Amino acid sequence: MTPTSGAPRPPFARWLGTTNDITRTFLSAGRIPGLINMAGGLPEAATYPVAALAAIAREVVEAHPHDVLGYGPIEGLPELRDALARRFATPALALTRANVLVTTGGMQGLDLIGKALLDEGDLIAGQFPTYLGALDAWRPRAPRFRPMPLGKAGFDAVTALDGAKFAYTVPNFSNPTGRMVGLETRRALAEAAHRTGTWLVEDDPYGRLLYDGEPLPRVIELSAQARLGEPYDGPVVYMGTLSKEIAPGLRIGWVIAAPAMIEALTMAKQGSDMCTSGLTQRIALAALEAGLIEQIQPLVLDTYRARRDALCAAMDAHLRDWLDWEVPVGGMFVWATARDRALSTDLLLPHAMSAGVCVSPSSVFDAAGQDRSAIRINFTLNDPQRLQEGVRRLARAFETMQARRG
Ligand SMILES: Cc1ncc(COP(=O)(O)O)c(C=O)c1O
Image (spheres, rainbow, N blue to C red):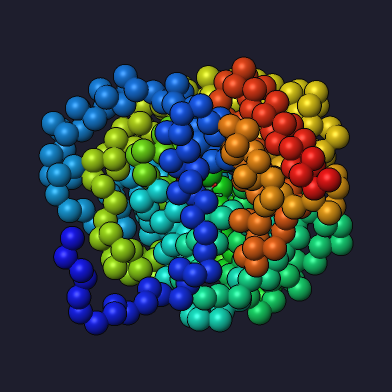
């Protein structure tokens, strides 16, 4: 080997030293033989409508070669923006194409918000614990985070939002906790965003994954009621994605917001990827028009409800000594808190990996990296048998960790 020569290279950006690569671990964990991956928020591949998507893909390539193979408008295909505006409009929430930006997955919406809004040191009021992908998206801009404990009694939304550049919430079956933000808190957030002039990012990838009970109105709908009939111009920035509704490989997401915000995000997207794939936008449009989401929804809900129940039953049988949790009404995760406050869930992880199971420790959902009180367990990726085996392995991991602690 020739020795490397030349001057030392410049260091990488400082933020790289403040992050972790746990998402990368989740996404590649599926390839470790024998490991049961209960860490990531991954869908069950058997729910992907393969035949329908294959037929649509062929059709759109032949029917719309220019849209599919050329560059497209940064904001997204006009027909898809119109379809999304129609899909999310309600009697209270009037939307036009100018309210809609198509993004490359929901993740890009989060990234663009960081680019469009944050200068170094700006404050984010974030639902705590916070989706780690959002933390990843914003960390390079070196913001400050104010944790927003939405579940706490006496939560004061005006105080929580005051002084923040934007606030961030996942009101439906939050990632990571699986909790649903109640109607009163949704109203308080909408009202506080108007009163304080803070943007409020409502991230909603899981809204359709509701297993029990009734859905609640979106915060953006609650915030629109003050301006009946006019196209939305309020402070809520609503984000969605096809990742959990059809398939994440399509990488199709959207942002619905005031036209001025859509303009700013479009400028940010110009420097990111110029435009989202025309192929998957055309597929998404055809899938929406054909009602594909509604067609696969019963299978998706039945599969995931049964898996949630299987996970919670197995946890009841094997993990009651170690963990407390609530059964989530929707989403993809159970959030389980260690009963022994002195126990660090970061320390559990290597024992879990050795036992052949992987879960997410709470520290990665804390901007400060300090919360070691809980774990997030996914129930959508594995079938009930594997979930049961995963829980048995997790119980073993707790036992070996306890034995080592003495
Ligand atoms: C809360 C939340 N927001 C956004 C996303 C991004 O989804 P995608 O980029 O796959 O559309 C996810 C994915 O897990 C999520 O959990």
